[in-house]
Length: 328
Image (cartoon, rainbow, N blue to C red; front, side, top):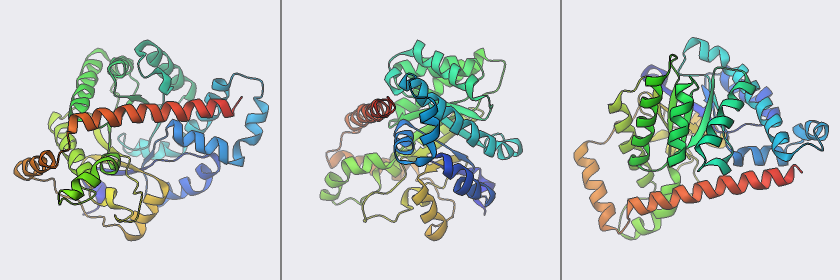
């Protein structure tokens, strides 16, 4: 069975101007990727290491650094949306590209709504999702943007409670909209393992499993909700270190009606060596046994997820602040 037959899509978690015209387009034409995502850390890397932006940055010299950032990012996202548009025309669940609001606005609902709407209008393509972190202010922003017919990528989801809050926000937004926006709930996977694997291994448990099982638990709930136009998206799926196969977090999460956004090297590894076979979801009994083992190992999931959310927000703020400083 082909993965597209079960509604699975692989997206590229990387944006860079020269790459868009070469490797990105090739991945689309080869049918490997169906969408793309970006974040402040990705743009920081691209803008500060790629020579493709030198002339544009020079032409904008003297402007406020955030204005320079937005000009560069909007151009890249608009180009990605243009390249993905044929896929989106064939299947409206595919062909999406995401851009994140200023991470410094993570606790500012009004600011997030205004910036999300402004970025969406400036980019000028309907196949763009506005990326909003799953905070209390973020849920309010998600609802408001969906009500305006703007599609949303809810990001930095670590817990089932966050996913439920996203679904509630989407439901409220849909009820107020005369359009049919789409959404993804981005479940971060590998960061749980990097944080907890040492403790789980000491208790005799396998490495690289906690993030998978947590993502599957959240995925099950999203599927059960059956909210039209909403898919689970598995994020943070690159492997760091040599213990796990490089495409581990793609191979193990090939589930129906889902998305996996992966770094470029992970995509290459999956194409070359991965196992493109749809994967079963653990039974409720298997899931219950696993979480009992996690608890016995001394891993407190609520505290872990809260810690990872705080770290994720801090990392994106740091990347964005550093990026703006480099553009002055």
